[in-house]
Length: 332
Image (cartoon, rainbow, N blue to C red):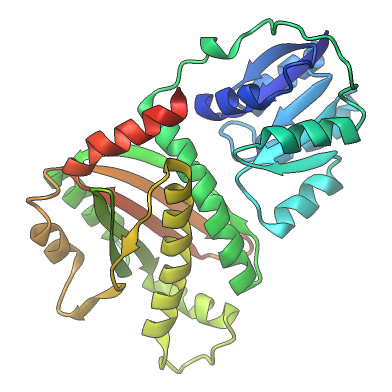
């Protein structure tokens, strides 16, 4: 039996990955929810082979790779991540990862990779894992967070290519807000700094909402510099923000749509503040639909630059039952 460690902060991601394992691979499975748990398991000999996520709390995948190298621990690490930036691939290879697979892992690709690395022998005897996948309990928020994680990674790859930087990815947050709570949350985000915001509506199979991308005005000059726009010339700033919003919002929605098997139609993006519309007015206008709002928040950062983008996907209350059904199908 080969000691196999599956490390990911998402129970859904671990469940999907265990499902994708070759049925004839004799493994003893241990699961870890973050890097510190993974390191403890590896030191105990429970990770001869490790399937490792990158974006995790406490200790991320990059830190695990670096620590394994520093301690010279005997394990073969394959990264399975939603962060598909070319720079992410380069960094994990430099740190000693043997392979990089994008989430959600394809069973055929995983099998081929294991065979190529000599970790799976043809004709191996099937074995029952010590920790079957059914023991992994997955809640709705965990599942939606993982779906969002995969989608944000694809959006980050496009943004990194556009700006020529490495995009630092967060762990998405998922919350259910009352309209008043959403108002307070956005007001709090606006405190102490001026914000520009782009809003874009979307709908698909009765799942509807608004995508809201927030830029801190103090950071816009840095964004212009990254795009090669001349300092001191504000011409084209609105177009620049709309273009960046189109990349991030479009890629995120496309990534979510692909996973839950829907097709979103998107409205025209609008820069709030133009035509006298503000975030407050947006909330007032949508208050009837947003009695309760399912909010997914993703905060992108640019390495080496004091630049952050806050992306909120705000699903209407009426969308939640269908979205829950779509997510439930992924969990089964």
